[in-house]
Length: 133
Image (cartoon, rainbow, N blue to C red; front, side, top):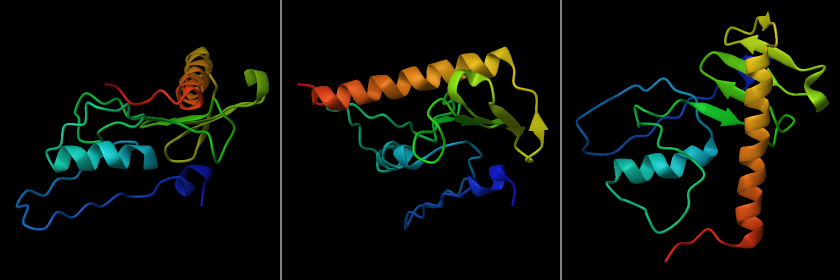
């Protein structure tokens, strides 16, 4: 298996009695399961902050900012698997077939955004300020 294949895990949701079957080909993570399930159940959760995204939302761009399995700053999109290194010097990028591709300035910019998003999430959790009134 290539490094990319190790991160490809299908999510299958079965809703008894639901007549509609749909295949959605997008990138997501564990954090996206709750917003997706709430959408399927017709529940609008506006009373709290959710870090994940509804995978059924056609406007969702499909990006995962990695934190647990590879260095922060790494990300996965529908086209790129990017493994960040300190300072970006030894970073690696792969297409979704596992072929190594050139690291671009766009990858480095997205890595900075990934780090910022993770820092913002940590700040909200540290402040214990994720519930709204």
